[in-house]
Length: 215
Image (cartoon, rainbow, N blue to C red; front, side, top):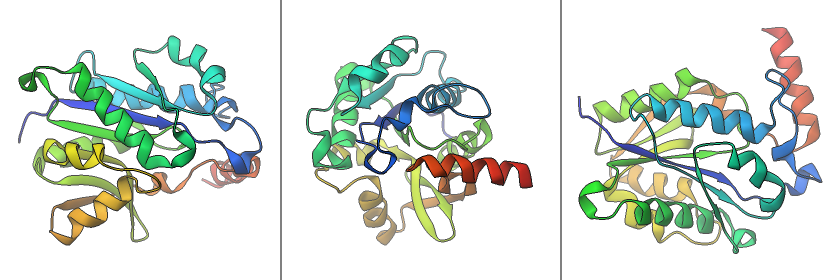
């Protein structure tokens, strides 16, 4: 298996339109942390398995001022996207560009970048590690989550995809690139049902609580 050096880009720049407020500061019922703190901690911990001090960029947007104090307590670089309202592609492009600017010269660049979303409350350390292990087995592939036929993030992108990620704009995000690489047989999907649960509305927290009680 290949030895990876994986940096991270965690996207937290959305406007939470359907939540009618800042969902990233809502409380995760299992840990009592904010949604952002909960997801960021697990994202960072997963990357720590393959690097003592992983390089992690968190891209912020509309709610930057409200969430910055939480980010200040974490070992991450916070980057504000002034174009957050133009779509996720702009945030992903900025995040990857920021990782690249941290890792000059070229020889110090990470071999891969893991892209995640800050509003996925159910992902576990095991989920992230499954992606990392798959990337070690197929280092030239995009490694993504799969549930019910959906290919989605979190996903790990090899260095050959970095320039394509930087060129993304508007609403063309990671899924757009995954689809393109899939056509060329360069995508490996890992079944991670927990990736389907995101927080869009306050009622989503209630549904997750009901799901947890039924387990």
